[in-house]
Length: 328
Ligand SMILES: Cc1cc2nc3c(=O)[nH]c(=O)nc-3n(C[C@H](O)[C@H](O)[C@H](O)COP(=O)(O)OP(=O)(O)OC[C@H]3O[C@@H](n4cnc5c(N)ncnc54)[C@H](O)[C@@H]3O)c2cc1C
Image (tube, rainbow, N blue to C red; front, top):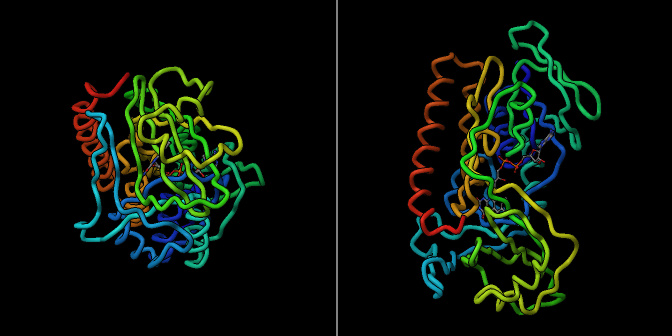
C-alpha cells in the first residue's frame, strides 16, 4: 500500500517515519514552509525518541515559561520537576530539516517543494487517488492530510471546519548582532486587546508575536512591543529584521477527520490556541498514532474521530475558563 503524506511539518514527518517503521511505502510531500519559532514542551521527548531522534541539534533548551496574565507580575513555571527535563526553543526551519532528514533516512520518498492542487479518485470510492501537484502528479492508495490549519486535502474533498474563533498572530523576528541574552524561557504578556509572546531562537535571534481576536493591524507593531511592561526589556537589544507575518492562531476542528482512504492529523485535524503551547506535541503524537490506522477498519477510524472530538471539547471547556480573562 502506497501512502502519500501531504505536509512536511511535525505531524507529516512523524507520520512518514512511523509508517516506514510499519513497512509502508511512503511519499512525503509539501511546500516545505515551516512554523514561526516556538516552544517545544518536554512531553515531546519520548515521542522524538520513538521517531529515532535522541537529540535536536542546533536548538536551544527551554527551562520554562514566564507569564504575566492575571496580574502585572511575571509568574514563573519551570520544567525543573518535569520527568523529561527541559523543553526546547525551536528554530522551526532547523527542526523541519531534522524531521525531514529523519523521514528520508527511514525510507520515505521526499518531494519538496510540492503543493497539492487537486485530488481525484480512480475508483470513485476513494481507494486509489490521483494527486495533481505543483510539480507533477502522484498516485497513492491512502492520503494523510498533515497540511496544518489549511487542511488542504480535507478542503479539496469538501470537508468543513468548525471554528470557535478567528484569532490571528502577527509575528516578527528580531536580530541582536551579538547579544548577552541568556533567557531560556517563553515569555507571555497580556495586553489590552490580546497578548504578546517572545522567546530566543538559536543564533542571537528572537521571535515575538502579538496574538489577537481583533482585526490584525500590523501598524506600530514594533512600537507596541517596545511599550509592553516585560517583553520590552527582553527585546531591548534587538532590532526588527525583515517583514512581519500574519498567521492563523484559531481553535478549529474538522467536521470529519477521516474518510474512505484518507485521514487528517495535527493542525489539519484540530488546532489549538498558541497560548496552550500544545500544538507541536499533539502534531508529533498524532503523526505517530496514525500509522496503524492506515487501512484499518471503519470502527477504528471512528474511534480516532471520537477521541479527537473529546480532546477538542475538553480543550474548549478548559479554554473557556480562561476566556473571561482573555481579551476578545
Ligand atoms: C504564532 C504561533 C505560535 C505558536 N506557538 C506554539 C508553541 O509555543 N508551542 C507549540 O507546541 N505550538 C505552537 N504553535 C502551534 C504549532 O505551530 C502547530 O501546532 C504545529 O506547527 C502543527 O504542526 P503540523 O505538522 O500539524 O502543521 P504545520 O507545522 O503547519 O505543517 C503543515 C505543512 O503543510 C504545508 N502545506 C499547507 N498547505 C499545503 C498544500 N496545499 N500543499 C503542500 N503543503 C501544504 C504547510 O506550509 C506546512 O509546511 C504556535 C502557532 C502559532 C501560529
